[in-house]
Image 1 (cartoon, rainbow, N blue to C red):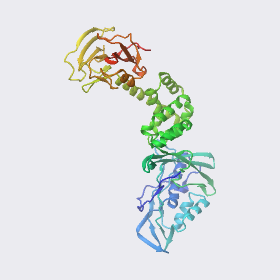
Image 2 (cartoon, rainbow, N blue to C red):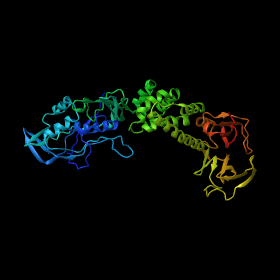
Image 3 (cartoon, rainbow, N blue to C red):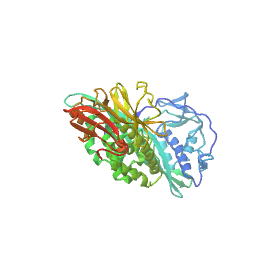
Length: 518
């Protein structure tokens, strides 16, 4: 796979660092270390390894020596703090080791430090990487500035230690890839090209060995701190141009859940089909879905949380009530295998509540008439009439009493007749009917009095004929279409009354305790 520039130059010389409080030295690494101790030992060892493979010890640029055409600068390493991943605290007393700051004045000091972390073979290999990198002048350590640049594709690295037996630990490094770029793609029928966005995402892993030797605990295998493998099966480069999408979409059925999730991380407006497919796979095989998406769930990758929570939002926005029930059954019965899956399950449950509210709000918004820039919608209104709308009439007209003894009122505004009830014991009101036979007020779909039957059915293709329905106001009509989506819209519907192929009136109503079509 062709890739753009992988490395960039690091230009600035590192400077010396201030003294920090002493902590146990490498020689004090415990005989029976814990997980946090091993991970701290790795962090310090990685710093030492990087001084040979990735960068250079901090240098004093004002003190230089030249030999054989090479310039060396004095190493400025006095009480240099070594990195740690864990610190001991009253809340966590399992951390018993962290490397002390180091002072390196001679090549022998550096040799001793390297050998305190690595086996003799690894230590020798580090010095052989660049034999002229470090050397003494007059008994003082100098070095060439030889930073090689960092991996642009590497977003972050996570570290996890595990004990295999009393004399052996492994340290698993997960390297996370995330890099957005672009590539030229041909414009069909021309000699020109255009830029299409690309993204490289995923992860690769390396496993290191820490073993008890005659000299103490030493790493017997190691790798650079940016050792991301772009050719790993779990790293992908996607192109999001129109032609690439046309090629990818038919193949998505053959992709793994994990690959689909990676593709969605940067899909933006192209995400709908892949997101629906991944949600369907969640409903069909949740065990496989949780296992496949677990790496994304614990990753630092951008948009990973949104991908993991995606099924909650999709299922309430686009799926049937039966599929929504299946989704809820999974959340109620799924048994996580580990802490990562437990967190994923909790995130999905939290997302479910947000998704239901969002879908309910969207369903409510569908039952809205827009007139003169004002949105009139069915549903509960907080507080007393006119609910913060100064353009409404000063006083509504009483219209009787509802089945539950609540008072009914009506008012007219910009060609729309609105009927609502005062909700007992809450101080709120509930708009349950809106009617218009005047051109101007329109649904969110843009249908108004005067729209054609073709326009109506293009906008509301699931609308069903229901000629037996009568409007709440006297009028002449010869055809009725009812749009009743059900689901989170509950008992709400829109009735379109037609005359001679044109919309003559629109009535929105919440029947509260039943539906017309189901």
